[in-house]
Length: 134
Length: 134
DNA sequence: CTCAAAAGGACTTTTTATGTCTTTTTAGGG
DNA sequence: CCCTAAAAAGACATAAAAAGTCCTTTTGAG
Ligand code: SF4
Ligand code: SF4
Image: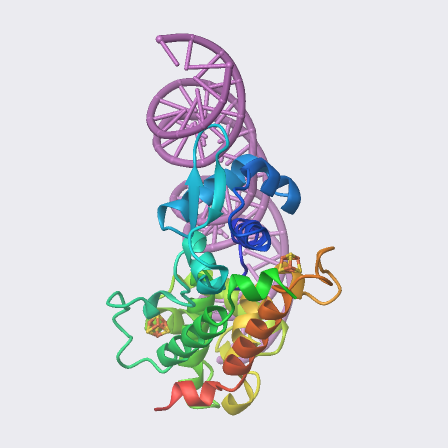
């Protein structure tokens, strides 16, 4: 259970690679895709999602490509994962507001809240800078 | 991401209910299913899985049903979840032996190992006894 | 022998994951 | 202004997993 999808794995590989390049250098999607071994059309979709929420900045047309949307130490693994996979939700009932009718009396509920909190804590402390360097 | 499937949720509800009953009382699957609001045929499959690995003990024929396979404080939430959902695997590369060719040089890899370890730690410390009582 | 209950296996349906393809927009350079 | 490069957008296509149903078989008590 709890398995990251390929989309998530590809997303991480792609943006970590981008973070490993000189910060001011615009990278072609096709180059990134080749470097991290991901189908280019699929990676394109992923980077479109990144672009919408500002994780990367895109330039169109000749000489276009991608750069990070902010410094690598200001983007966490949690940002990246949640961008493409949605929020970290170990169980439906941890979604704010939308909880099952049992949640008040349920002893399992707090366990999932705890899992969510711990996982978010771990992923939120790792930045692209950490991942791109050694 | 990391969402428990319905099967997992149903599994927990079912076995927690069983743990809340007197330990020596054989419970009908149909009663459990009704009590926790799960399709009986689906819950049957789940309890068959439990039975195979000894989480519950089953009795067939007239007067048959299910009881826990061992005391409620010796069954953890991790046991239950892994029984029906398989091992806790945040990413493919954390499976022992089966790792991607990048794993040695990959900085993300240890993060997933950490996530796996934390989640297993949390779920492994919660027993059915904890969940069945208050 | 009969009835009750779980076990097993074959199916079906729905949803999610994993892509591809085509067209459109944007931008730079001659 | 035109041509070309590159990302954005949207419509598909295919495959796999999730979620459940149905039918038959085994087992056991009375
Ligand atoms: S029964 Fe408990 S753990 Fe399950 S969805 Fe409801 S509140 Fe959450
Ligand atoms: S690239 Fe790193 S995180 Fe991704 S599967 Fe390989 S070892 Fe794991």
